[in-house]
Image (cartoon, rainbow, N blue to C red; front, side, top):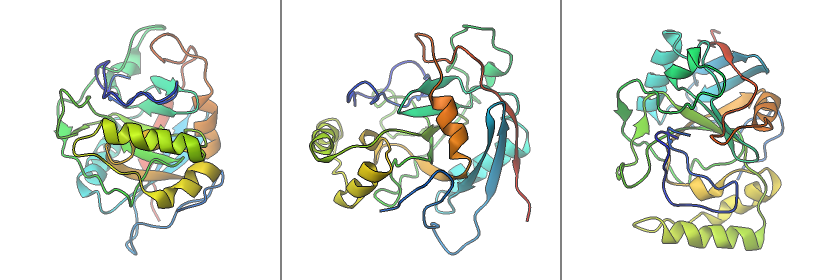
Length: 244
């Protein structure tokens, strides 16, 4: 989702890479997967012009977790747009230049000026619907798969069955070095819940939507321009840490 080009996993029309340009569980509209640990997780509420949703941050991605908490606490995400949305794939935000963007302006190049080292825990975390992951530059510019400092995407995806999964599995093997093998135990989830398996093992997943998936659904349905920017602005009103 950063800069307009991305790694070469092009699978069907929705299998677009996540650069910052744009860079085992059953999930219902408002249910969650099993916690990553017995530790209490930080919850972040997003209020948007299309409704609210809540993200739980994973404790075993501490660099991404702490960076996200810092940005939220500084009100960084307040007033930003979801600047890139792709039907049956994902929605993306975190470009600081989107706050005052004019209609039709190309977005996605904005940055906070730093990257984060990858914290990829695959197959523990995979791209099922509702997962939250960091955008990044494509492989050629970014062989260590470092994450953008602020841009992130929320997976929507679609459902995949046997033959489709085998094709995706082979393409992932062909386009990663060393080759990544997709976990067979995730196939039921991709069939029953949906997601974006072509991204597995290549991006840092650092949280999950635990409430408000209907908001994500509405945004991913948006009509967009040639740069995947919604024709209607979907804006974050504010983001904040939930206190118990």
